[in-house]
Each structure stands twice: as C-alpha cells, then as structure tokens.
Amino acid sequence: MTEATALRWQNRPHENLPTIHYLVAMPQPETHLFEVTLQIVDYQLPILDLKLPVWTPGSYLVREYAKNLQDFAVFAADKPLSWRKISKNHWQVETGNVTQLTVHYRIFANELSVRTNHLDSTHGYFNGAAIFFRLLGWEQQPIRVTITPARPEWLVTTPLPSDPELANTFYAADFDTLVDSPFEIGTHQLYQFEVLGKSHELAIWGGGNFQPQEMIADIEKIIHVEAQMFGGLPYERYVFILHLFHQAYGGLEHKTSCSLIYHRFGFRNREKCDRFLQLVAHEFFHLWNVKRIRPQALEVFDYDQENYTPSLWFCEGTTSYYDLLIPLWAGIYDVKSFLNHLSQEITKFLTTPGRKVQSLSESSFDTWIKLYRPDANSANSQISYYLKGAIVSLFLDLLIRSESQNRRSLDDVMRKMWQQFGVDEIGYTPEQLQSVIASVAERDLTDFFKRYIDGTEELPFNEYLAPFGLQLVAESAEEPYLGVRVNNENGREMIKFVEVGSPAQLAGIDAGDELLAINGMKVMGGGLGDRLKDYQPNDTIQVTVFHHDLLRSLSVTLAPSVPSKYQVISIPNPDLVQRDNLAGWLGSRIASVD
Image (cartoon, rainbow, N blue to C red; front, side):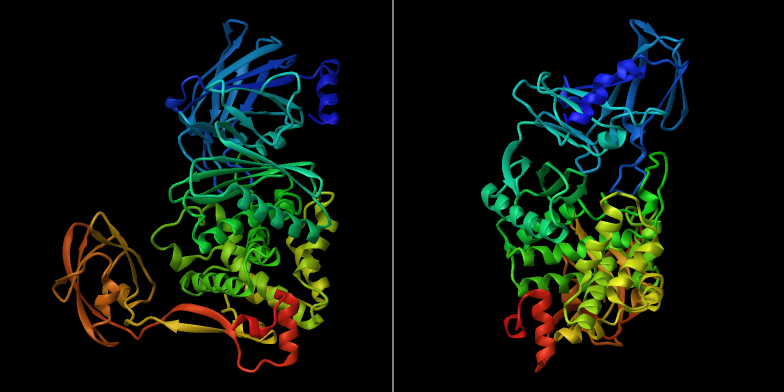
C-alpha cells in the first residue's frame, strides 16, 4: 500500500465517508462461480446505486459483464434490504438509512481471455470491470479487496499494493485503479526480477515449452529499449500475467501490469517466439501510449457505454508498429527477420479488400460495432486500425526520417506526446495529435491525414520505402483467381469468405456454403488451391455447393491470378544516402538485408 493510499484509508472515518471493502472467495472453483461480498460502512444516503461496467478499458467492445452476475442480495446485519434493477447493469438499493450494508452476489467465470474472468480447479483470474460494482458518486474513494483462495497453497498476484498485516488484502486508490488491476490466483509459477532499479514479476499459469530464464532475459531487453525511448519507467513495480493455453493469443494493457495469453507450445519455433515477444513489446509500450498518453475521449471513462474516438489508430496502430521494431532494437531478432515480419503485416493489409472501403479514423471510431464483431463480410467492408495504423505509422516514421536525415523520427513524436500529454495525463484531441506529428515532421500534414487516415486512398509503399533503399514486390498465386477462402471443418470444405467483386461472388457463391466439387469431382482436405492449378484464367468451371442445404451447381469464369504475398526487399544498387537512411532507421546497411 502506498503512503498516500494508506493515509486516505485511515483518514476516511473522520471524514464521514463510506468505506468500501470487497471480499472475493471461490469455495467451489469447479462451478466457475466467484462468491463476491461487498461491505459498505458509514453509508449515509437513503439510496445506494450500484453499476457493473459494460466494458473494460483497452478492449473496445460492450461485453455486458452483467450477464454473468447472479444471486444478488443486500443485507443490513441479517435483515434483507429492498432493491430493484433499474437497467441491465444498474442495481438500486433502499438503505432504510442504515449505515452498514452487505451486498452478496456471484459471478460466473468460464471465459479464458485477457478481458474477462476464468475460474476452475487450477486457478482464478478476473478483471475488475467484470466483477466489481461501481458505487455511483463514490468512484474516487479508496477500495480494499480481500481474496480467499480456493486452496491454502494458492498464490495471489496482482499489481495492487498489499496490506503487510492482512493476508491476501490489497488496496486500490479508486475505482479506476481497481478496474485497471487484474488478479491471478492459483499455483502459477512466479518469477521476480529487477530492471533499472524497479521490481518486476512474471506470473505464468499453464504448462508449455517455454524457458522462463530465456523469456525473462528477452523481456528485460524490451523493457530497457522502451524505457530508453521515454526516459525511464513510470512505476515502481510491474506485473506480467501470462496464461498459456491451446491456440490462444491476446493481451490487455494496464498502468502497472499487463495480461497476456499465448499458445502453450509457441516458444520453440523462432517465428512463434518472435510473435510472443512482439506481444510483450506491444502491451508494455501501452504503459505510455494509451495508459498515459491517451485521447481526451478516454481521459474519463464512461463505464456504461461506448467511448468514441477516431484516434485508436495511434493508440493501437502506432503501438503495433513499434512492437515490430522494439525486438529488433533489443537484439532479439535481426533486420531480415524484421523485414519478414513487416512483409507479413503488409500482406495482410493488401489482401484485405475492406481497406478500400473504411478509413483509418472511421475504423477507430466504429471499433465498438465492427472490429470485435467480425462476420462473413468484414474483410470486404472494414480494415483493422491495428493493421493500417501500424503501416501509416511506418510511413510517418520514414517521412520524418528521410526529410531530416534521421535526425528526427516518430520516436520524437512519442517523446513529445509523452511530455505534452502523458506526464500529466491531460488527454489530447485528434487535432492536437496531428499538430504534434506535423511539428516533428516540420511540414504540413493535412494532405497526408486527408488521404491516408481520413480517406481510403491506396498507400504508396514504394514512395516511402525508396529513400531507404527498399521496395515492395508482389508474388502472385500459382492458380487463377476464384475469390474464396475455405476451411476444412470436420471433413467439410466450408466457404468462410467470398471477396467482393470476385468471380465467386459474381456467380452467386456465398460465405457459409459448403464446397463439394469442381467440374463434378469432389474437393477434399483443403485441396481447392491445387485443383485450381489445373485451369487457366478465363476458363469456366462448374462449382457445386450446398447453399442452405440446397444443392447448387454454378458456372464460374476464373480470373487472372492476384498477388497473394508481398515482400520488402532491397532495390538494386542503392546509393549512399539510401544506405545511410536504412542504417539510421534499422541499424543495418543494405548488404546485410539481402
């Protein structure tokens, strides 16, 4: 517990303000039910309003956490109090002017993700927004949390400061801090290490093929690089919570911690290990970008509804750009690996037709209804602000570097945003963000923002890569173009996506159809690509599908093959300026990337 929090807690009874104490138990973890008790003392009002958040900061989707709440009851001593539900997430209690209340409820927790809750016989994990009520009017009051683990041997790990005299008891300065502090409870492996004089912990739940000391060594390198960029670490203690699971990936940033979920066997393969460390670099970079340098629209959280901003491309996309660079700068992988990872991101972008439909600012604003709710048409109608935001950030970095001979870069934008908005956490507007970037670039960026952030113009990759002696080349698929993506599901070839304007769409093939045959011959086991290699562009084939259980045979005229992969490579005979530019950006000259 910090001294300031302790003083606030000790002084509160004299201020005649309510004390708030949560107790979280898990007596039968196999039921996936957290038992939550809220004790309120010195409450002076006739009405108590309790609201459960509908979303959690960092994950921009209304997740309706109240759907998991059950068995709500309120008591004054042993006497039940009257209450009613005002809305989906709002409970109102008539206190009868009693000053001590106890609220009981249970939370069903069986979704293993970084933004929800999970409880079973092996561990308990929860996010504050998904389990704790907000007391309307008392959001700034300090809050005490006591955990009763399911087993005596279970550990409790959280970034919140602990009470040295009370077992498994922790303090949050206010409700925002409580929401921002996840809990991992169980028999996880806990590693402690120090970087730049600050305490760090790594809690790992789940088995796998990871090597903890190697993982920690790489994490330390990432911390050093990011701390150097911003001039130090803005905390005294930081906690990494890592869940290892089958076929899982994700992260959620917090002010003094992060939650990560990754494939349990994703550490032996070099490329998969790189991806994990990019995830670490991404969530740790959020310490500055979004947790402290954040849009004005996210300065004060409204936990009851969507919080709109067109600037998530900078919060998440710019962070995604740096999560590719930071492992390079940390010496975790080399320039060739970096360019390969960058090429993969560019390939994802250029093979997503929605880039021509949705702008980057619109993607940011509409995340609440689109990004986290993909459907069969999403790739045709939208683009990820993570993906395009990273590429636009690349362009801005290259633009600034090429025009200043590497004397300035996007790093200077981040540092200026940190000093101007992050240190004091005052929040920035979209106009202020553009102004800071333009000031570092020393040029008017109105046209750039209009075309590439607020518009849907195609991005001119080679125009920005050329000053660094690089170019983007396309590799076309071997087979003619049909325009579908197919997954094998339990032995059935299911069409998951049909590209807009493609031969398949023009013929009437839909996502959700089951692909059966081409020219009367069954398509089996992911063999569509190989089958199409037997035909030429402009050939007409018969595609047989089940469409809503109806057998259909459709004539499809194949089109010429389209690029399926893009690669960033060196240009022939780069000049000295191009070589120096690349060395200033990536720390390597052209010859080493060939």
